[in-house]
Length: 255
Image 1 (tube, one colour):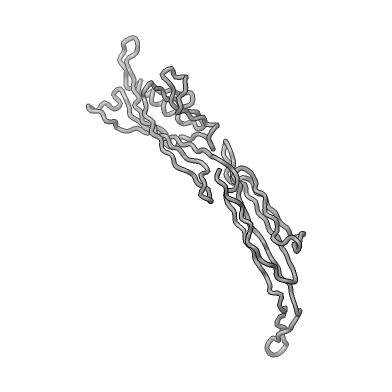
Image 2 (cartoon, rainbow, N blue to C red):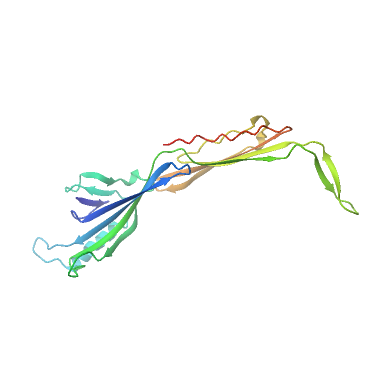
């Protein structure tokens, strides 16, 4: 098998690949994707050339520089190919199919391999590196928050009137007052803005005080964006108390 990263091809059977996956859950505990890390263990070797000239440490240095430079690039396709170097296996990752692209999170680092005889850098060098990708699944609602503030009881409105001498005096200003309802909230949509809810009591809404907010994506990457914020605020008022009903919570569906 041949492992390739972008246009760089490792020697046949040069590396071992270990894969680990971690799920990404949204606020409703639904799976929204996963992070995958690929740890590549390899042994870079140089051999005598076709003319029989012995490989040197300088040859190994040149090969290691090529290895290191290949992994200075992100957003490359990578994976295992058959021995012909062109036929992909199931274990090939296309950067364009990931969220945010392929990242080299740990460039090639060199370690002592399990060899005897102190042969590191004689004609081989043991190394490892880590590549990370993210994927996304589904769409729809990511987060939801809403509240209702009730202001007033419909009772008397009064105030203390200051006096030139002595204590302030209580003064009735209005025998009856209104009830005020302030409904506000916010939500986040994965791939697009979620529609804000309607006011709980539309017949008593102050339409001139309605506020709706739409925010740009919070997570913006080279190869995708998500987390679009929506906000709302409704002011409602009446001379009688309204029957307070529960909020209409969006239905949480599995993707």
